Image (cartoon, rainbow, N blue to C red; front, side, top):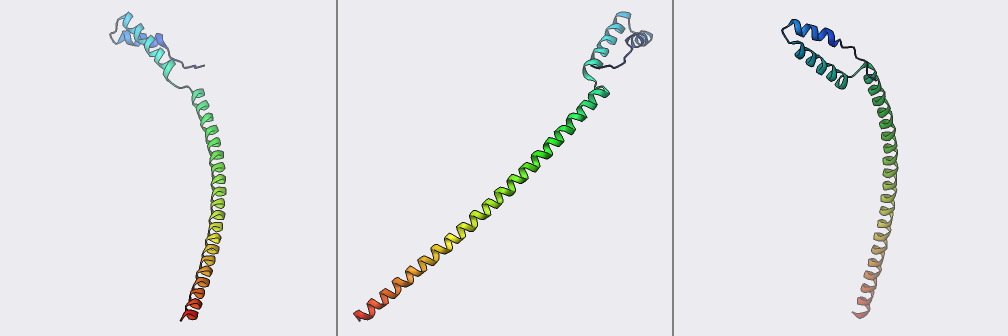
Length: 115
């Protein structure tokens, strides 16, 4: 509920003194009063808006902290996956190197027998 004090009677009186007709002064006073009532914010409106902003700020901080936790968990999971991949890769390379060395020794041994 807005409670803005605007004296339309005084405003209309000043307009008449400035040369406006009675009808013009009343119409302008009414229009200005409507604009003030519908568009200007009261102290209560500002206080409500500030409260809403503070509430949103708190929610945003909680959301950011939650996202940080999720990102940290995702990074830790990614690190574990990369370490596991590195171990598998080392194992595979070691196995391949062993197979190649065995094959090379077998080929050399076969060549020695044949020659």
